[in-house]
Amino acid sequence: MTRLDFGAVALRLFTLLMMIFLIFPILVTLVVAVNPREFILPPSGFTLDWFKAAWSSQTFLRGMGVSLVLGVVSATLANALALPAAMAMVRHDFRGKAALNLILMSPLLIPTTIFSLALYIWFVRIGYGAGLLPLFVGHTVHVMPYAMRILTASLHNFDPSYEEAARNVGAGRVRTLFSVTLPVIRTGLISSFALCFILSWNDFPISVFLAPPGWTPLPVELYSYIKFQYDAVAAALAASLILLSVVAMVILDQLAGLRRVLRS
Amino acid sequence: MSDDAIQVQGAMKRYGAVMAVDDVSFNVAPGEFVSLLGPSGCGKTTSLRMIAGFIDPSGGAIRVHGRDVTYLPPERRDLGFVFQNYALWPHMTVAENVAFGLKLRKKSRSFIKDKIEESLSVTGLSGYAARLPRELSGGQQQRVALARALALEPQVLLMDEPLSNLDRALRVVMRRELKELQARMKMTTLYVTHDQEEALSMSNRVVIMNKGRVEQIAAPYELYENPATTFVADFVGITNFLEGVVVDTEPGWVGVRLETGQVLRAVIRQPVSRGSAVRALIRPERVTLSTAPIDGLNVLRGRVVLSEYFGAVLRYTVRLDDGGTLRSEVHNFDGFIAPGEQVWICALPEHLRVIPHERRAGE
Image (cartoon, rainbow over all chains, first blue to last red; front, side):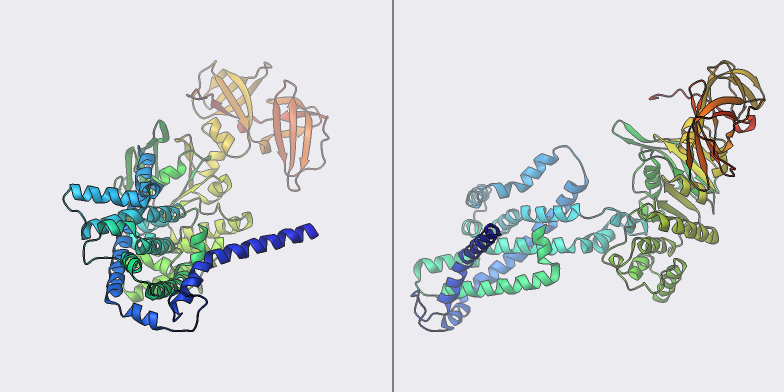
């Protein structure tokens, strides 16, 4: 019995340490963001001035807008492309299926920096360089493997007889897709979209290489800011984003059942 | 033949080198209940799915009320389909499931409402309209699937093993309800099953399939009493086989010599030539046993090796003196015959059927 208890206690201790390890950076960010004196711990008071500064900065607000548009567009495009690809993969056997799957998943295997550089060189070769189109293409290609993964899993659980039943009662292919297939795999679609959006929102290397002037996404703006400024505005912005993420997680969980998605 | 509700002509489906369905032809008359019966992998479900339009045939033609539908998409065939796993759309309520097809047909709201009510009451589901499929039992889900199909008043109802996911007691109840409903609505039905009891008890006619081919098409009674092939005889019910050679023929009758030299008299449906190898078959309930010596035609001798009592029926396994085994079933019995006892077995000529030995590839 005592041995067993020791094991249980050790496991709890280990779990606790790991949790602290994971949460500590977030905690530091939150503390720094409300600390009146820049980066000096322990905190000497409480202030929301950094937040005010962060949320009144035109640069950050514009970066946030860019990131938002970029995330929504690339997540939408990636899912629109990944859905038919995943359908073909799940439902049909054809020559070169394994090879095609590898190609579609390859952005996952290549380090993002290398991938971004290659993309940049390629766009320069064909005469674009950095620009809006390269930026959106880069983000879409980057997040698409994740959409493929989630949608493939959803479609594996999708019983094709749902579609046959719809066709049988008189629905054409398009009607069947919108009235039956998409609603049934709704959970997968929402979580795929959310994951793609988050990946795009957090991306740094692709944007650094491909974003044109005037279209700098938030992570790049943040990076250039903290390179030269030694105040806690960046920390306040980061803290805001963390809180927003928490809210988004709760909403997503209500909407799609995040626990189910994470388990699959 | 053009007033048939369904006409399948030489339908084929090839998967690589395998013929899943190989030159299958049959028809279903209006109001008729026809079953496709056979072991798994015999091509019965593939045939049904070709009729529904879920699978493109590799050859042949399918007509519904004279209209060629062979290459029409499923949504333009106007056929009801009930799936083995029900395939109720999980994001729609019972009422929405039933209404979906009606809405596609642009029916008025009041018409749809009446139709939902009607088809749910026919299937005994009034009061369940607002439920989601996952809140229903298997039997209830199958009723919804049926209501969904019936609401559209299809020309023909196709059913793919609709009862096989239910437990046995419920299956028997549903089987009766389904048959009663089908007869009352005079709904033309094509029903796929591997359960011979279902096929025999519900159908007007049964199509027996094996290895992608049709073995026999007949009414249940004909199928059991006059199987056309050994496969049918073996698949439907229990049959005793006696191997022999034809030594004597006259219209309707043959003499079959067994290995022991004994000649049995038997009924024949297809002509056979003298000297050909045949199988004589007899159902266990037609085999009578006697512990006292009997004389006469078609009497064999043997010894009881096993007697099993099941209440309504008593089953004997008898070892014949020449080494073969026969099974006998007795329903009105007055005493057991103990294992080891000598018995005289009577197989009346009119109960003994002869089937030519099939010589087929793969056998």
